[in-house]
Amino acid sequence: MPKLTISAVIPTKNRVSLLKRTLDALLQDDYPCKEIVVSDDASTDGTRELLESYGAAIRWVSEPNRGEYDSRNRGMALATGEIIRYLSDDDVPVAGAFACAASYFEAHPEIDLLFGQGDLYYARYGLEPVLFERRACTAQSITLRNFIRQAVPTPFSETAFFRRRLLDRVGEFRLDYPGADMEFWARIAKAGLQIAITQQKFVDRYLSDLSVQVRQERAMLLQGLRLAREHGTVSDLLYVTFVKVLPALAVMGARKPLHLLGIYRTKRRVMQRMHEQKRVAPDRQSF
Figure 1 (cartoon, rainbow, N blue to C red):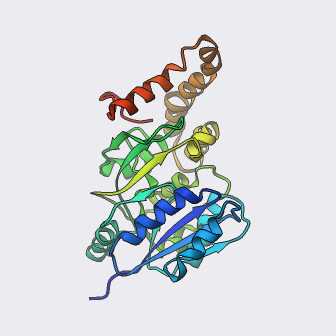
Figure 2: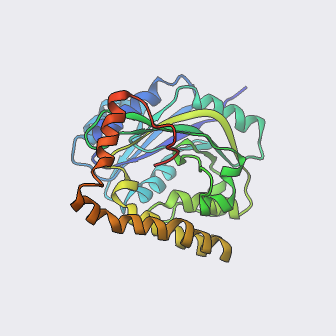
């Protein structure tokens, strides 16, 4: 029986060492009908030379664009697979994820978007990566309300596989959102397309000082208000405002005086201790 062709689409810009780790992991997966597509935003750090070294094993394009999600859209346009796999250039995909997703889609032709499970490794402050979060997601995690509110853990976007056909229904990633993946999932849910989640682990994620959610922390937070206005209800907007955004902004505002007092630096010391002990504090559920 012919297997579904799955295209892993990866945007990148000037992160050649991280990209190599991701590509090598993908190539080690023995799923026979996979396609690896890299959309490079005109990197100058040797990324182009790295991509050339893989020969025909990888399809790629390198040209200036307007950021990560423009790169994703261009990569999807280049991809030929029936299924698109969402990945980033600092992820380590788990072997067997292609086959698991293909089997699920073949068994459930009505499903448009499939999420899996993932682990998050903390790799900031120049430390070696340490396991920080083992996120357990369920059917409650993939509702429109939860994509907006994030009241329970949402699946990592990097665990997502989706059918190409849904692009005809909802369009591509929007470039006016700093974290356009969450808006994309909300748009899919709002359109009534079928979303599922499996308990299979698909990816190891790495949070570093180069990660978008670190570099654009405030913008990523405030986009929650816009997401609630565009796709949610008044209740969602109130929840995001008073439960998510305002408390988080208060913490951000307190960081400078805490730094001056030397208190906030304890976070770094805690992470260093976690790294030394190679464990995660049991009461920490998310970053």
